Length: 135
Image 1 (cartoon, rainbow, N blue to C red):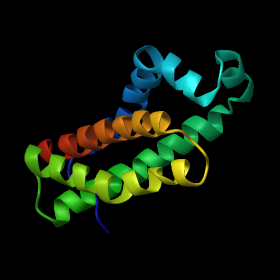
Image 2 (cartoon, rainbow, N blue to C red):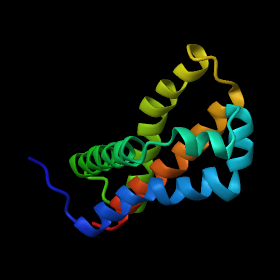
Image 3 (cartoon, helix red, strand yellow):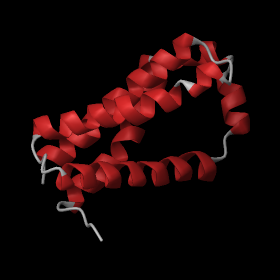
């Protein structure tokens, strides 16, 4: 079984999506995102289930960082450049095509797709770059 080489880097990488997300979907693009999703702050608060939202996101982040660190280690890409390469490849190969499903099948607009995928790209680059450089 694979175990991360640097647990501090692993934990920080796990927290990065929540840190970046709080900025991305908050002060940076929160109003635009809410408009595109036809949401209001009241609707969000009314429907928020913290265990489902934050708990599910945390589990997903742990799994993502684990797989990224496994790929970085397995492919001997333990540098900043190697981590960025793995992060970009994972985003292009897995996240981007799966994200397209929201446009193709859920009738989400291109604006939401671009906004969400830009967030995902930044997060994947940060997580994998951190794991790559801080072994």
